[in-house]
Length: 342
Image (tube, rainbow, N blue to C red; front, side, top):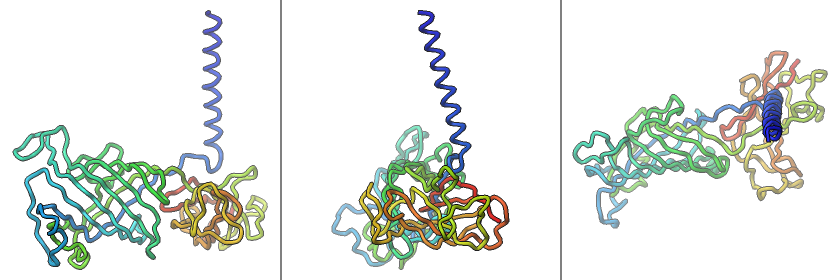
């Protein structure tokens, strides 16, 4: 029995040691280091909160003018509609919808408030993010607590209130998880009665603020790593190597994975067609040593599955030596890889 236990302990020790070696080896390979965190700062305008202050649904959305809500003391519902105008400073279009059940949770148990051990309102949030031309990039859905709810531990420092779990997404955000909270506000949210016609929301105007989303994507854009190093090529498809380094101003080609949907699109798991190019649907960016590079093209690689071709121009004035190349799609960044520049 003692020999059996001794063998078991030895086996477990060997497995642990092997796992440690494999992890260290993986982290030492280009492109396999821990990926950067994804934080989306979503800028909002024309933020209007519609309070369900009448019981007759036939009166909903019928008043063409600006209204003032009759706000109940507690235990009511309201809907906040906002225009998404930018993500991480990049202009976009879209809509944020927040539906709140106002409970006025409060540990002090003040009159008219719901006694509880926390604060905030029950909330369901939806973000629909579009390119400036109206093309859908993807959606995100969250559920949690808004208003005076405390910020979740570990949330981005730009978060000022609320505690919402990201429970899913579509398009570029398929399968994403994470959390969201309220960010900076530069103009108060405008309150309105549910009787106000929401088609006039932009004309009447509203508040300005931000949502801060800490996103954990299901997949990230990554540059393919081959036995010879990162899959980065010159125009003649020869590999970028120490003996054939890249040059400032040169257009390079990268083979990548994880850039998401393409247009017009293929079924999941199917190769990209060889008779027609498929453009990556999401905004794609490349940085070289932290500097933005001009992305010439981003397409699905014909004949391959979930593999993409990105052509970019090395910025003028790039310093000779080793350069860190990093891809991002829909503001989700992958690991950086290193290539030589002469």
